[in-house]
Length: 313
Image (tube, rainbow, N blue to C red; front, side, top):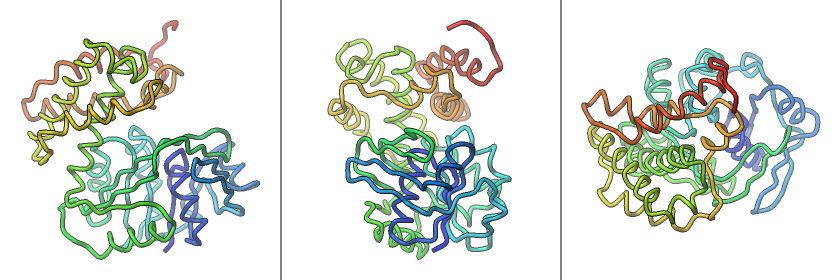
């Protein structure tokens, strides 16, 4: 299978490297020093499951040099999805499938609006990984996991082919009965932790132990649940309790990418996380008071990171 990894960051880089190591025809689309390192010395993966290097590795910053592929694994940040749509076009032929794996619930519709639903399969990834340096991905935690599924929940041969490819590389992959439910369950988890964590500027251990911030996490998740239901997502009532129980098992000092990005004055996924909860809720007449506070309070930092606002830290 011809595969393009568009966005060779922590998730895309890791999964792409595993696929390439297993012998799949993989091309990494990256930029800058990261691209140069992948080209010259390969893509290095330091992992809790064992280290390895993919060398030589096919890599470029120009999708036109790659041409049409069978599968695009889209690993860019959620806020970057609308910005890369035109760059994806040279990779697409009639049977090309795009699987977005960033956090959020809007990427599939953004891709479908641009290329048609026939080219898009819902996807999500679970892994704790990041770029440790140019050409270097650190897999620091969690068993690498991918889920894919047709957006209309139908059974399809192409999702089975994708599952087979990932299974051959040793990656756990699932085709859930409803990928939208799976996406929203993850969304409920990461958006609530990320938003409250960034607002309070504390790790998950603090958030869950202080009664007041623990209640903020619960309220945040309940708002996401209400918005999901209003948008026709059949998410389970017990999702909040189950997610809170899972949060109780996380490493005490754990933080999300949203919190780290804003702390480092980098553009974050704020608009695709709490911003999306507010936006999608408003469209259905659902009030989201906590997410509105989170989004409004963090927006100045986000605008500063984007270079649209200036003030001292």
